[in-house]
Length: 63
Picture 1 (tube, rainbow, N blue to C red):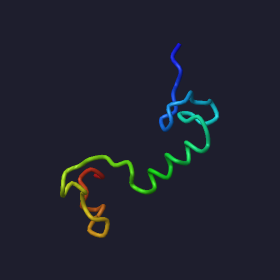
Picture 2 (picture 1 turned 90 degrees about the vertical axis):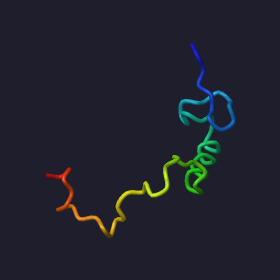
Picture 3 (picture 1 turned 60 degrees about the vertical axis):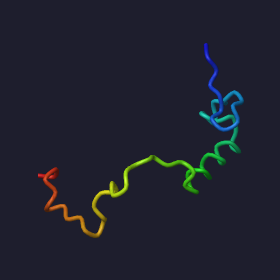
Picture 4 (picture 1 turned 120 degrees about the horizontal axis):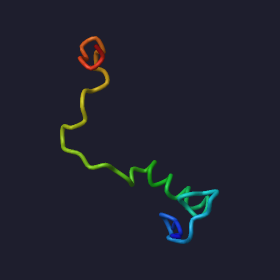
């Protein structure tokens, strides 16, 4: 049986905080997300249609 390790400090994870070992490590991870520490790489210009230019009546996927 393998032990889950905390994705921040690599100590054994605890059930109450999975996949982390403590609230502290959970908060560290949240801070990284909020500060943009985790990103999904994409291509330039791959952001799609700006929200103010979107018209659901012109979306063929909604017909």
